[in-house]
Amino acid sequence: MKQKILELLGAGHPWAGSVQYYKTIVSTNDEAKRLANEGAPHGTILIAKQQTGGRGRMGRSFHSPAGTGIYFSVILRPKCQAKELMHLTCAVAVAVCDAIENATAFRPKVKWINDLVAQNKKLGGILTELSLNPDGTVKYAVVGIGINCNQKPEEFPAELENIAISLQTVLGNTVSVEKILAQLIYQLEKLSCNLLSAKEQIMAFYKQDCITIGQQVKVIDSQGTHQGTAVDLREDGALLVQFDDGTTEAVGSGEVSVRGLWGYC
Ligand code: BTN
Image 1 (spheres, helix red, strand yellow):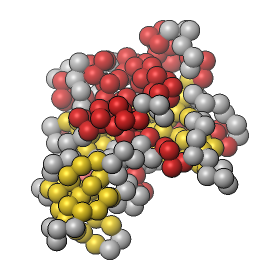
Image 2 (cartoon, protein in one colour):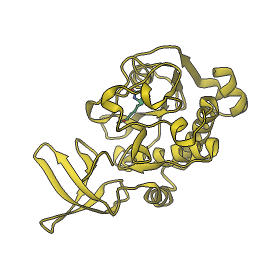
Image 3 (tube, helix red, strand yellow):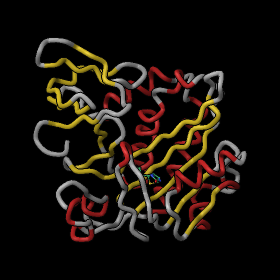
Image 4 (cartoon, protein in one colour):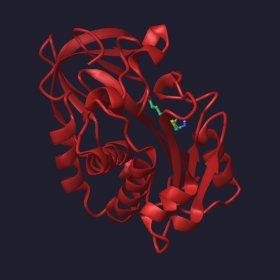
């Protein structure tokens, strides 16, 4: 697996020497954070065949069976303030869509803020975790990406049956996990060079991929559920929602879940 990814990526790629492969791991994000705290450099990549404790946003789990999915984390060390990096998840979403499109000719959509979707079902997700210095600068960011690649519909657990989908189901044929992984590394390295300088352009691409804008949504926070319409996106990735009482608010990705009115999307 690792050998094939490196062949596809090319030995001269700046991140080729920092790919680590695990047969089984609890969570590539947890291990990436441990390595980052020990000083692992920018561009350290962790790929697992299986995760036993894969995690998503808001404490949800991410189903990570052996061999059929992509479970990937990368350590980034951008030199900036945390507040300059609020668009990171959106930027990674565009890079992941580019990677999947280049590897399979199919471009997924994005449900704000971090879900990859196809046919109104979840194809994967992004989990971004930041560690900060006392002065507010970024110590490191761990970006975790999970993609359902070759699962058959009946292989998802019952609770995901109507929510999750794989690339194989979308395309009608198995996909090369190695090809997608090599593309992911390529796109993420490119992104890490432009992350701060091309923010406006990146967010314009995110808007094109994001299906949530223009939709009626339910915003679920600690206060309850509020209904409205997602009208736009701010440059930091916050969603502008016009609520049914006429007020418009910027909804950050913190502890907020946004759902369509009917079903998952
Ligand atoms: C979500 O659905 O909210 C995000 C899912 C992110 C899953 C990936 S798989 C690799 C990395 N390790 C984890 O534990 N989570 C991320």
